Length: 218
Image (cartoon, rainbow, N blue to C red):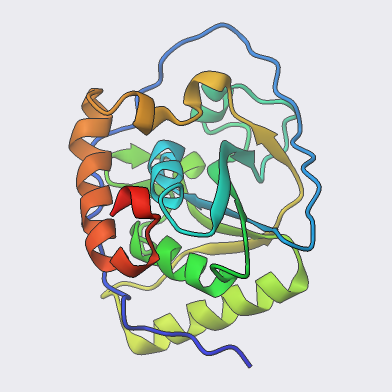
């Protein structure tokens, strides 16, 4: 049995700016093949622009690594520009390597559902397209079970006025995003999108999850 806590389940204001589509040369993308050990596990979430998702999960105690990337599509080794067309089927995602002894998959899901709007289909604010869809890519049947149970519970509790449209699908592929996307918010806090979209989301996130933050982010 998995006990789902709803103490923090509050909707944050959706983002209101589109993720910039900076043009760069084609970058070779390598499929991440990180070995999971007995001390770590992996989750993969999509909740709009992956700059936002990365910045939030980096700040959680127990999260050891966050990698932005692309998942759920049909094209191999897609570039950012290709994904932004919406034609590859990929979602912008963050792969989160975490220590389950410090933070559970259920707790990660709590953060996931509170830090984006799971009721807008293929959209977060002005970020529009299937690449911005709300999605949990599960790595095993246990993750699938927990995610489905939590989604069902949230639906019954009427946390949001509209139905939850979050996709729950098996992780079939994951391609690491181009280097310039990595650690983007931390390296570019004054960039327009970061300053006006991500910073407010992080401030609200910190108030909700103060007890789960890394000491350096409190």
